[in-house]
Amino acid sequence: MDFIENLQQKLNKLPKWLSKIILALLKFVTFILLWYILTKISIFFLYKPRHYPIHKETFNVCVLKDNKPNWSTLENSRNFPLCQKNYKNVQVGTYYWIDFEKIDNDNNEWQLTTWNDSMGDPFIYRYQINNKQINKVKPLWWSFGGMMIKVSYAFFALLLSAIVWDIVKKIIKKRFKS
Image 1 (cartoon, rainbow, N blue to C red):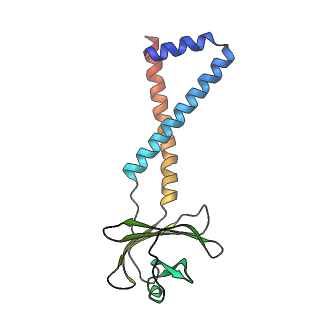
Image 2: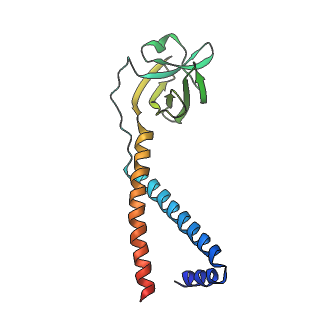
Image 3: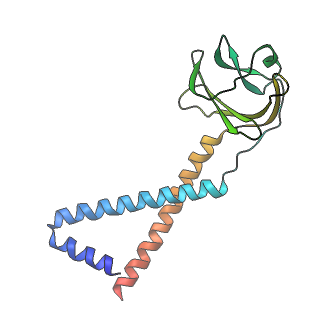
């Protein structure tokens, strides 16, 4: 509590208008920090991506078409060589983008992320490549909709932050009145 008393003494030495602005900014930054921490905690503990069943007709893998990364369904991928290195933010066609990265070296596990614009929610495909057999892919899972779930967690963390902020404010006021 010495920190708060020292802060109050220093703010009392400043002009009244300046101390109000500093106090308001301090409260705002503290609230934003609380909101950020609660959002990250809720995403870390509560968010688990939903993994959907695999259909060979719709499961996509990264292939090289004309020596450029692109995606193809699992059924059609046998006609093209598979991607074997990382690609970041590669534009495929007019509206589509892909990221392709190696996730696990031991299992030769790769992840293909596809989306159709900068604000779109990506589709994520995770699979293993068998190096012993050419173009042999073992699909693991696919997922989508993760960005909107994280946004909803941030929204509900905002409500929780307001509640926590109000409780802490009442505790501090009660502490200083007695």
